[in-house]
Image 1 (cartoon, rainbow, N blue to C red):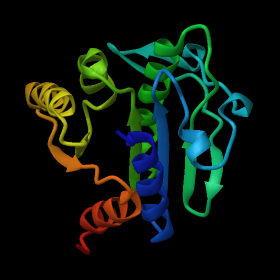
Image 2 (cartoon, helix red, strand yellow):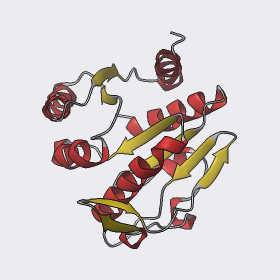
Image 3 (tube, rainbow, N blue to C red):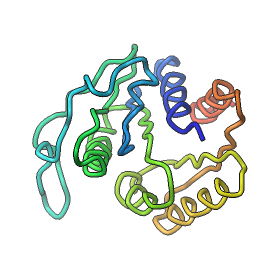
Length: 183
């Protein structure tokens, strides 16, 4: 449905307006780097060793190595590994822990309802907004509803976004404008 492309375009738009922006690849099949013209397999991997338990939660044991994509835009991604879901969750938790250093954090999640509860309950729990992308097909609408149900269950605000084929740049511009308060 274009979620990775839209995530990259949105992150680029936000950073181009001068907002310090973090893009986090929380997809078990990480390809957000490729949308920025980078190679995921060449990125540093931030593993679970970079996190440690602290007072019933997790904290950073070491800082992740962020990749500079463009002015005001940093990427927390990583290469595919033997434990893709674990890596994606680790990047997501890390993104949450460093999000306060950025004006915007754009998180690209794995697709499908099987990841909804993990993503919304963990990575998105403190989110200001979850963008639910759909292309208006029956399957996409059912998946969107499941994601929205998970958001409601966790009190995470959400907005359904129609991915208009061939108009990803325009959709990203509209979203960035509304998030920056200029739409």
